[in-house]
Length: 111
Length: 116
Image 1 (spheres, each protein chain N blue to C red):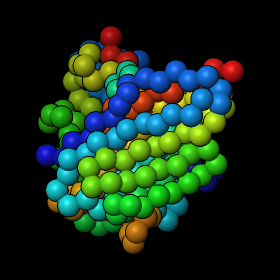
Image 2 (cartoon, helix red, strand yellow):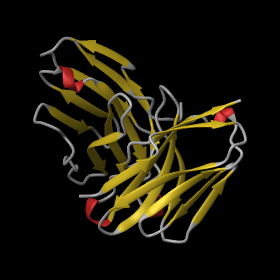
Image 3 (cartoon, rainbow over the protein chains, first blue to last red):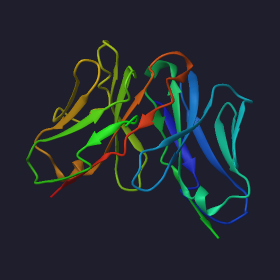
């Protein structure tokens, strides 16, 4: 069974204080790893797709990296508007196109 | 609008009643997903439709849950004889369904179900 574990569950940062979120996964035949952002009362919003170990993607203050066992989402010099829940998901070969999500990391950036 | 539309946005029902939740995906998207999100939790997969293929129902928690997709577009999730543990936000998502972008899902804002 595919498993995705995110840590920490919650993260409080001061504005400008860089940090990283972790996503560990156990899957049979990874086809893709995805990061989403979810604001309160909204549906998740797609951020990145990573396909193979060593791959990196960047968008503004966010950078996602991938190894064979985990992915990191680095937040550089965060701003209060980066406050959200960040969700990691995997797509595995045996599971078709469905995504298996982790529990998320709630990030709060204080000014 | 161009996004995924879900209705109702909020539904309060009594235990034992049936409910229907509707999802209108982005035009042209062939794949449609239903997920459930309980308070403070991640997303739990329920069911996946892809074109005319048989749906992947592997996430439906019991036979009280069913879903259909008519004409390859609008989908309805039905929960019969609702229980309090069914209280959650039900999220619908659609995607292009092919190529390398199958994991880029576009989510609606969800239907919040409360069973009293």
